[in-house]
Length: 161
Image 1 (cartoon, rainbow, N blue to C red):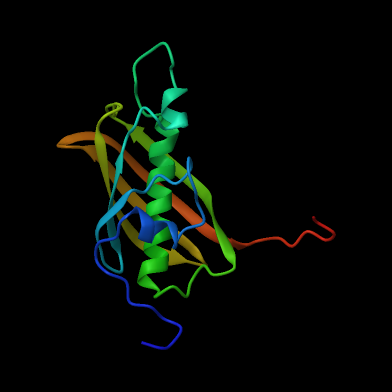
Image 2: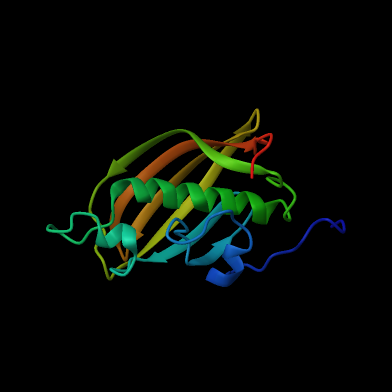
């Protein structure tokens, strides 16, 4: 390990995660890392009615998490895995973007539940990460997500305030 690399613990809490990813509330969907290795990460999120994105979704209907947020949840886990497995080197100076995704929604997750995603990176080709994630609420399958993400350099805007 070089001086530029950091060795991260196998479990992380919200306060440790927030230092490693470029997201903040309400967009940060990762509450806890349960475990990880170079190709796989398991993360959790508690779905709260106090979260503005949950409270505003189907306000007069069922209290469920929006489907698009499962895709974001898995994507954020993939980005965090990249940071963890590279010792903090990869991704510096760039931002993660979704190149393509496919979601298969099986069952909704409700406010008050905790969801768990297990995300596996199958390959990295030409700077693009190919991954699959499975999201559960307890034993109940919520969805499967497959995707491809990439890191892009943050543009410098001339004369920006």
